[in-house]
Image (cartoon, rainbow, N blue to C red; front, side):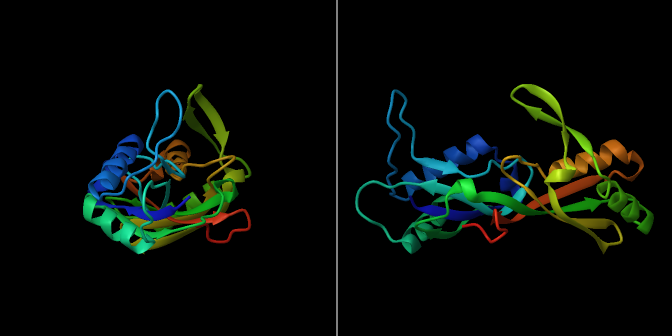
Length: 219
C-alpha cells in the first residue's frame, strides 16, 4: 500500500484528527485520485493515519497510508496533485511505495518550547531537569475507560533541556509512541502538576521524527 509523508503546521494544527481524515479524503477526490473503499456494511475510503495527532500540535513527520483504484499514477504526480488540493498548513512532503510495517513504529522525537512571560532563568531549567530525572513521575491520562495514572519515566528514551532565548526553554525528547505511547504534551502536564511555580505560560509542541524499534528513521 502506498504511503505519504506530510506536515501539519500553522493554523492547520487546530484541525482535529477526524477532520484531517476528511480533509485528505476530499483532497484525493479534488485531485482526481480515486480511493478504493473498505468492504462490508459501511464502506470507507482507504486512508489511515499512523499516529493521531493532538489538536494544537505541529508535525513534520506524519504518515498516511492509502490505496488508489484505476490506472497507476506516479508518486511524484500524486504528491503534486494532492498539494494543489490541500489547505494551507497541510503539505505532502513525499509519496512512496512499500513503507515499513506500522507494528515496527516505536519512538518519536518531539520538541516542546516552554514560553515564560517573565523570563526563563537557570533555576527554572534546573528544576525541570531534576523533575524528569526522577525514578517515577505519574501523570493523568484520559482514555476510553476514563482517567488513569501513568508513570511516564519508562517511556522517555532521552530528554534534553536548553535555553532558546531569554523567555523560552526548548525541551527535546525521544519518547515511546506505540505499546505503550506517550503524548509529548504530558511532559508539560507533569511540569504544571509537580512544579506549578515553574509552569510555562504557553507551550508549543512539534513532532520532529519517527523511529523503529532499533531507533532507525521510520518510513
